[in-house]
Each structure stands twice: as C-alpha cells, then as structure tokens.
Amino acid sequence: MTRSQAGELPVVGQRPAERADAVRNRRKILRAAARLLADGGVERLSLDDVAAAAEVGVGTVYRRFRDRTGLAIALLDEREKEFQQAFMSGPPPLGPGAPPADRVRAFLHALVDRVRDQFELVLVAESAEPAIRYGEGAYPFRHFHLVTLLRETVPDRDVDYLAAALLAPLSASLLAHQIRDQGRDVESIRSGIDDLVELTLGGGS
Amino acid sequence: MTRSQAGELPVVGQRPAERADAVRNRRKILRAAARLLADGGVERLSLDDVAAAAEVGVGTVYRRFRDRTGLAIALLDEREKEFQQAFMSGPPPLGPGAPPADRVRAFLHALVDRVRDQFELVLVAESAEPAIRYGEGAYPFRHFHLVTLLRETVPDRDVDYLAAALLAPLSASLLAHQIRDQGRDVESIRSGIDDLVELTLGGGS
DNA sequence: AGACTAACCGGAGTGTTCTCCGTTTTCAAG
DNA sequence: CTTGAAAACGGAGAACACTCCGGTTAGTCT
Image (cartoon, rainbow over all chains, first blue to last red; front, side):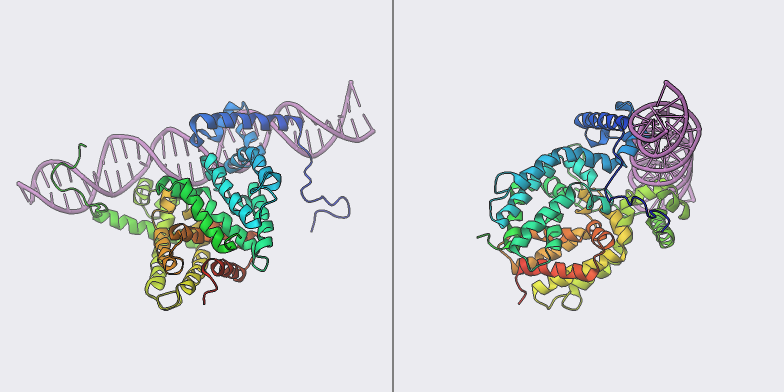
C-alpha cells in the first residue's frame, strides 16, 4: 500500500538491466563452475571453491545466483535452450508435424535423456524450493508444452494437472533410483513411459 | 572374502538388537524432536537443538537416525502405520472389498491428505538420497500396494513403472507448489487424480 | 569533467549439518 | 562377580551454505 503511487508502475518482469561488472562476473563464475564440475563432479561444486576459482568473493556468487540450486539451474539452462528449440520447432516427432500423442511420447523420451545427461546437476536443481523448482527455469516451459499437446488429445480433462502428472515421474530423483539402485535400463523406462502414454492418451492411432 | 567362514552366516536383515541405552536415547530424541516440531515448525528442528533438548550428544542423534532426513522419516513413520493398516485391512474403498480401480483412487486421495497433514516433515524426508527415499521407509510399501492393485486391472502392462508414475505426482514438493504457490485447492487436486486414474485404469465400472 | 546514486563487490562472520575418535556403558560368558 | 569386547556415547571440530555491511564502481545527469 505504501509503494507505487501514481508514477511509473513497474512492468512485471522489468529488471533494470545488469551492469557491466555484473555481467563479467556472472560469466567468470559460470565458467569456473563448469570447470570444477567437469573435474570432481557435483561435490566439488562448493560455492566457496567456485568463488575462489572465479576470483570473486562468495557474496558475488550468491548475489548473481541466489543459492546453490540457482547456480545449478543456470548451468543447466545453457543446454536447455537447444532442447526447447527441438520440441518447439525441430523435426517431428519431437517437433511439430506428428500427432500429439506421438509428440508427447517423444518429448518424455527426450526428457529421460536430458536428465540422464546431467544427472548430478539436475538432482541439485530439484532440491530448490517448490516455488522455484516449478515456477522458474525449465519447468514452466516443459509444462506449458505438454498442456498444449494434451489439449489436442484430451481437451475435456484437467490438462494442467495431467501435464504435471506426466512430468513428475521424470524427476532426477526417481530416475536415479530406477536406474542406479534398481538397475533398470533406460530402454525399460522408455517402454514404461509408453505404457503410461498409451493408457492416458489412447493407443495413439 | 575374509568374513563369514563356515560358522554362522548372518541372515540378511538380522541386526544385533539394540542395546538398552540406545533404545532409551532413541525415544528421548524422538520425543524432544516432536516437541520442538510442535513449537517452531521444521526450522526449529536443528539437530543441535534436538540433541540439546534430548539431553544427548549430537553424535548420538546422528548414529540413531543417520541424518536430518532420517529423523524426519522416523517421525513420519509413527503415523504411517495407521495409514498402512487403513489401506491394507481397513474398510473399503481404501481397504479390501472395493474394485481395484476404486481402491487406487481412494489410496491416492488418502495420500494427498497424508502428505498435507505433515507437509514440512515430508518435504524434509523427500530430500533424502534416492536410495533412501525410494528404498526405505513408507515408499516401498505404498509402491507394493499399488503394484498389487494394478496387476488386477492392467496385468499386461509394466505395473512396476506405472505404480511409480502414479506416486510421483503426489510428492510433497509438487503438492506444495500446486497448493501454496498456484492456489489450487485440494478438491481440484483430487479431481485431477480422478482424471488420471480414469484415463489409465478405465472408467472404473 | 564532476558529482551523485544505485548497483555491485568482497570476505569476515553466523548458523547448521555431519564426522571423528577417545571415553564410557552395556551385556554376555566364564 | 569379574572380565572383555562390541556397541554406544559425547562434543570438539571440519566443511559448507548463506548473510551482512562498509567500501567500491559503473553509469547518468548537469
């Protein structure tokens, strides 16, 4: 009630644009983090070490990336853009052109690979607060994409919930258990997904 | 190769039975933890504080409960037993007697309440390592229960995977987002679950 | 150029989780 | 009751995530 009187009401996501030194440091930190990660895995990714390797104070790391999970998300975001293009505008069945049910299946299959490629990092990213895990980064896009596809196949259902329900089994945490602990191979997970999609969206034809 | 020669080969889960002081301390810790939890919520549940309140060294807390998530799991396990009895041998539709699809639906509905009742604690428990989160505590029972029900309705599918896929959307983390951040009410989540179950297991009739 | 301000920087400091190991306790066998 | 050893205890300390704030810098306005 005290803020924004009559003047410029700030547009929602309109941030003031980053200063030059801020940009420089963000890059330095990301590069250092990627390097440390390539070496000793996620454990090596202590933010003190990252700060030291980036020749920057810890405070700077936290201001740029909020917390450990924020850094993980930022690292993931780099490859995520390719993935987004693949399912938004790439070749079918992942991209447009194929029947929706096929695209859903292709999307979930691709997601398995995506998670598997950067297991440790995704695991860290998933430990973010729910508001962040599901409200920022890659998730909203993935969810929106699924909602769009589901609207074409089961329009009279709660597509919003169903989309979330289809994404949930692809958490890194569950996949880690199925693959590492249970010894399931990726192929059998794919076919499990196929079962799920066939049942929910019909045989596909 | 050095252990177990000819003598007593140890049975798999056969632990040596807890010593008297161990039992006493375990109880002291659990009571202290429950009390702190009732006061200041999960944040108050720092293990130093728990140890102090239980009049026990921190080392003892960690030996008895492995880590923070282990304590959360132990606290949850107390009420979990009632829940298990409800779906194993209670009245239908949750317990035996109703058609499998109805039991699945009732089970998932009950699970929403279960998670909601102890949101904070479940959130902590879910941050356990995958091997623990899915390999110990409540999860294996829930999964096994679903597998049993699914075998009666979709026997020619990968019921093991499907059971995991039905449990995944009921993570505290996702529910927290849907309820707290998105403002969904529990009723709409229930109906979302109904959509999911109807689609996968047929109309129910 | 000079001055002003908001954004940014660094790193010492705080609180917390978890480990390590010397000491103590339990309990069973003699 | 004594004795021996496995199990448990306690708490100092290491490691780490994250905060706070006095000092610095970039970018803007005159």
